[in-house]
Image (cartoon, rainbow over all chains, first blue to last red; front, side, top):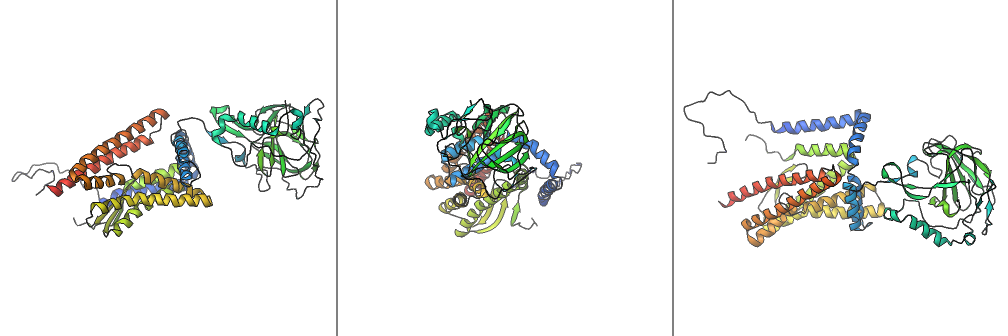
Amino acid sequence: MVYEGKPYPKRGKRKKQARIKVEAVKPGAKLLVCLWVLFLAVLVKFVFPVTTANIQETVLAFLENSVDYSSAVRVLGEAVSGEKDFIEALSEAYDYAFKLGSDEVEVYAQDDGLEADDSDIPESELYYNVPSATQEPQIDKQDATLTDSQGDKEVTTGQTEEQNGDSPENEVSAFIESQEKYSELGLPENVTYEKPQLNIDGCAPVAGVVTSHFGYRDHPVEGEIIFHYGTDIGADKGQEVLAFADGSVYAIGDSSSYGLYVILQHDNGVETLYAHLDSVEVEGGDSVSKGDKIGTVGDSGNATGPCLHFELTQNEIYLNPEYYVKWE
Amino acid sequence: MGMKQKIFTIRPSFFVLTAMIMLFLGIRAALITIISIAIHELGHLIAVWLCGGSIRKLRIGALEAEIFFTGSFSYGKDILIALSGPIASLIAAAISGSIANYFGFEDAYYLAGINLIYGLLNLLPSSPLDGGRVLSSILALLFGPFVADKIQSVFDLICCVIAMMAGIYVFLETGRNLTLLLCAILLISNCCKTRKSSVEFRKQCFS
């Protein structure tokens, strides 16, 4: 007979011991306790969403700095679905799961709800959806060198590649080369580095110097990498901002990141956005001509100094504005 | 024991894990994890049923589930049963992957990823995992149970050492990531538990 470990009771002698009853824990008790803990956790999560959110944030902030398991899992899922090369996915998943590097890729322009289409522009004070363009299309394939209304600066549009000696392919490849070190990151959605013909007569919206180019850049804070959906041109506060080309005012709005902004709609699916404005001189629905003053340079929104944030899209794809407007 | 034989129990560790995932990764992640574990166990269950065993008891733990069944199986069937779990996971991953590819559902990507991870993880040749069971059975077929046991213990050791080294490496590199380390410790403890019970079992059978 196998007797598990306990000594045989000594016959006759009964040791007087304090009867320490070690009750076997009832089999269901552990389960019940854990169920209660889970129940309480769910309860707390729903009844005190803010507190839990705060706690979650703090813990996540600590964890997040070293882990991002969801993305790791998702990336592996992409490998399974065949949309990604397996080795590539493995290394990406490894980076996500253990974040051995400290670079984080952050998407810049999209997350404040600002989209150049008519579905929503939150936090906007004025919103106009212009039903139809009223100006005649100007298809001006050869463009002379323009002087903007400041009078002292010459700018050329993308139509004059012959004049400034750059063929479109050179510009594109030069730009792509400048973004070389980010090539592994791919491109965000709705962005292209290509230079399609706009077939629009355009001008520089403001005279100034480019302070931040289109594309990926190292964000000064914490070494993050962010994608810049437009070009920032430094200028004096109060300086005139001009319409890039003929068109109509599609929207005027105010957001925490863009500040005061205007969106113009032009021909051929082209739209331009002017942000961080100090003031707006047009109203929704107005027709504007190329070079018309639409506002003034400011530092509203999250601009670090007075500048114009200029975005150019065609059919809702972000293009590099510097292909089409030249600043020094 | 006057206790009724419980047919279906869930170990407390399961709830702890679920609560942690829910808190840190969201309810969706927890659900997806539970679904993938369920798929894996379903694979095992189907195989057991196909092999003619009758399932007596199911106990679900944090990262494993134990299926108690009657019926003795040949090594071949054992291999089949052990493999069917990971195979089910991988099939589920492939299906989710196709769905993700054609329809682009976010959840499908996560499901595919989790099932892939769980399936591959279980194929590691360590005793508590399915992979270890497959290996044991194959070795037993080739060399008989005792030699198989010895060889299996070598594999166990190798897996534990590699897991431990990986865990320490990641911890040192990131300065704070403990997850892999904890997984390694979990693996080691489960290995010891499983080995102890398997050795005793075999002793009982053959003494």
